Amino acid sequence: MSSAKTLFQLAGADLTPPRLGDACLVLIDIQNEYLAGPLALPDANAAIARAAALLARARESGAAIFHIAHRGKPGSLFDRTADRGAIVAPLAPRAGEAVIEKELPNAFAGTDLKAQLVATGRKELVLAGFMTHMCVSSTARAALDLGFRTTVDAESCATRDLPDGLGGTLAARTIHEVALAELSDRFAIIARGNVLA
Image 1 (cartoon, rainbow, N blue to C red):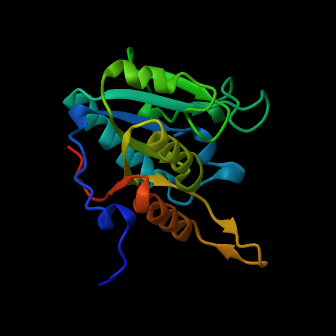
Image 2 (tube, rainbow, N blue to C red):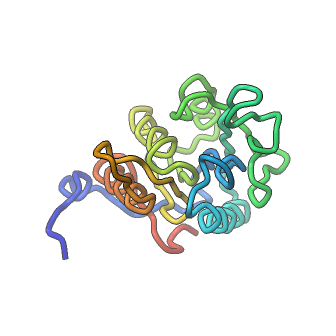
């Protein structure tokens, strides 16, 4: 057992995940772009299945639901006018669920996400989506600055292999776990298993 502790643990913070019914579920960039081509994620399908189950529980519990979609240039990555930029079918938004398009990793940057979250009166966020080290991490870090308490559903996120800068490759699973460890230090509660209900 590790003796290392997060800043949250050292401060005695409450690390109990929220009830979904009291939270805003923010689904980040769960788009077809990540299923094929240069950005295909090795764990995308497993994460999508988990996120779909999480979304179903969130809908049943009365959570406020927000779908975030990265918007790229026409004909390029994340082209929202093409199938590649569409939100994956198992997580298709329903009427009344907000869909917010962004152009930067942080879902708050250049969008009205903060205003829409504030309008719900809820301070608890649950994040899921792609990629763990990029848009999920950027959004979780910004959420702290904006006064939200954030939980990341670990199994509903995934990422890709990255070059290590030394001529080798870091595996997607390693990148995912390191990103979660970084967030767990001060930015987010990391939920594993079916603890979110």
